[in-house]
Image 1 (tube, rainbow, N blue to C red):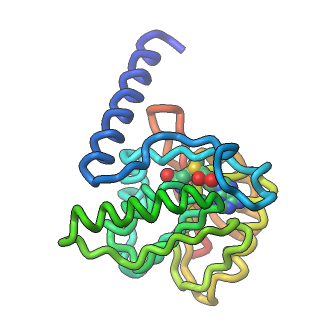
Image 2 (cartoon, protein in one colour; image 1 turned 90 degrees about the vertical axis):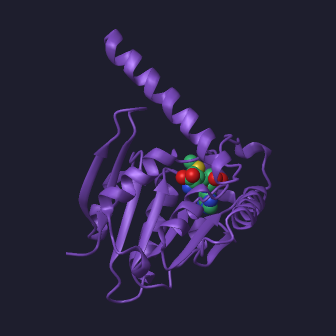
Length: 218
Ligand SMILES: C[S@@+](CC[C@H](N)C(=O)[O-])C[C@H]1O[C@@H](n2cnc3c(N)ncnc32)[C@H](O)[C@@H]1O
């Protein structure tokens, strides 16, 4: 990598770092610091397949949503491995119909709940949709809502992802239009066999972060 690109990436990382701090402060949230799962209260055996907590950058989240650009009030947002709840609250602000966060670390669910309260206290004028924080292994979540945006910030390896994707595609109600956002898509080969088509690819210039979006809809 030449030094111009290195400097550009370094500046971009710094910019994201500062933006994350600014928005956490502005929205009265505490979502920024990463957490290793070894220090967390996790009952599930799936922990050996899991990735630690790290929040999606605000800038990346809004870039993805801008590209996808759906009528949010007709869709539900489901974050698999929702951590401290940053994406849940941002999805709530966008105006999704209902928002679900599935997170197996109890302590992270508590953080997400306290972030939800803190946001609502600071912005009582913003009407958020129901935001449900579910302390559960992603393997045990079966979507019952129609028209969903499933969100995965590379939360687990292929063993868990394959089963979760099967649950999403089998249990989502008939006629449901579903979108799958996959950040850092290391196991993108698992989507095709389920009949899910890739409709969008985003290459973030910073952090080499790639995003792929898949759908069941034609
Ligand atoms: C990279 S973080 C993403 C956090 C959040 N979705 C975001 O984008 O800001 C991955 C999260 O997935 C959670 N996780 C990993 N495996 C899980 C599983 N099997 N069930 C539920 N949560 C899981 C971790 O505890 C961690 O909080």
